[in-house]
Each structure stands twice: as C-alpha cells, then as structure tokens.
Length: 92
Image (cartoon, rainbow, N blue to C red; front, side, top):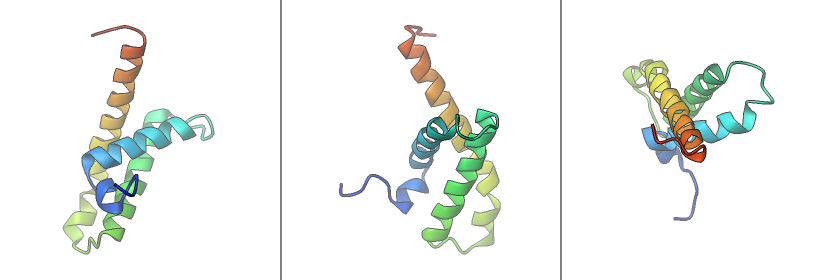
C-alpha cells in the first residue's frame, strides 16, 4: 500500500466514512456549524470529487450523491459516537 487514500477508496462507503469522520473532527471547532451538517457537507464534497476523479459520467451516478452522502455522514457520526462510548467504558 503506497497511498493512504485513493479516489477509488474515497468512492467507497468505508473510505468516504473514514475521511469524513477524520475531517469532521479536525474542522468542527474551526467551522461554526452543527457537526452533523458539517459531516454531511464534507460527505457531499468527498463523494462528488471521488465521482469526478473516477470518471463518473452517468447522470444517475451524480443524482445519487446526496443520498449516499447521508449514509456516509451518519456512518461517520455513528463510528465516532461508538469510539467515545468505548473510551468512556460504556458497552451499550
């Protein structure tokens, strides 16, 4: 593995969720909007860029980005919440 992220990786649910989670945590104090909105905006930007750079030319691919961004954003938010629960010693 020569690269941390590739455009093909960012076009997947797992890759986009990791990137959105990391960027959200990095930017949430600098950008004063609700964290869930920030993660959604980042998800749209990442998925749009990944689609562009991987050659997505079909209109149906572009049309589904906002819905996929919801899934990526909630996945990233849920993963961060799970990390916080584990850090605080809560199992449920």
